[in-house]
Length: 451
Image (cartoon, rainbow, N blue to C red; front, top):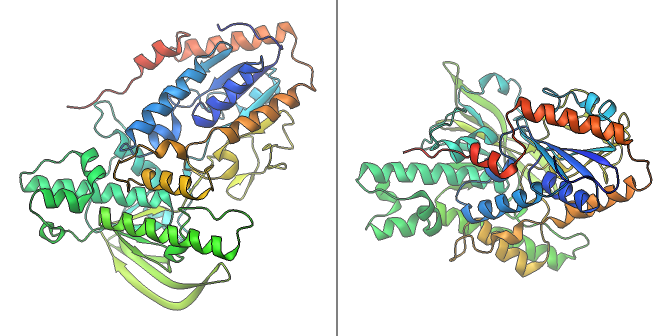
């Protein structure tokens, strides 16, 4: 077990990735003992499973950051433990004796495609973004046993943010590599993403037209300048707002040019085209944007495709014992992520915002932000060297400081209760084969690359 706490407080953190590791480290720095429950073997969350693997530098840096935080004295790591399954949430909050429980479990569930009956066609031509990106990130690993997909030309993507661009890039990179392979040209995925499709083809005396690919299309219910690639700062005047919109258009134009996907704006999903119990396309409704709001029109059109990938956002997975309000937990205090039924619970990160991407908290300031985002999208000449600016830990750090302040007003558990918490923690660690060393465990569960 780690070094003893200096305050007597013991805090449970549910989720060990960016938000969970940050809040755990901040609380440990305040003298709290922290037990981090992680549902996966590795604590990297959306960094590993939601951030496409061409972000190699950012992923490795964030892995090291998370690891350094979770290996600190005073922090116990409990992998392969789903709260709400392996450990009941109400039991954790009310019976273990923790001073506080912090939800940092992110947003892992895809927002349902808003078409009646669509869920019946998942796996029958309807694909959701989260399992698709998880597959892309891991399918070359020898031990991968999750869902499998095949990237096919002519895919239809419903979305309108960074995640939908990621999906489109995966389709375009993989289908381009496959078509080049047919010509005897082997291209590394990372190099193709770095240089872009047109420049790579040019190096082999080829043009896009030579491949005979249709490409995939993103269908977005708003205008290109509305795509939330760059956030409009609060209180921005019309000039500043227009500048942001122009930046959005410019970034989107660069992305479509570099990766050869298409965007169909002002188009909302209105129905699935189904043949022989398989999705073969979409019925779409034209929209118009007025006063910042989307209004459906009477015009519809159809577009056929090999399958439909829904990328319209991520929401938290329901946890038995927590009341839901719509797609999110029924928080009564959104600053702290508080729940009426559990006065000792706080929440941080995407589980509160409902956003499933790791860049939800990002800089708003002009050029630095724009350059960081261009790098994040893979549009800069230097690849992704500046993308680390897209990840900010300060927002989570500030929340951790507030939680620590709140704990300062309550009595810590007795030494006997602390000992019982640590004993229950040890038993769960033993049950999953965790030997007590974060570094040793990480070596044990490192993914094995395929041949």
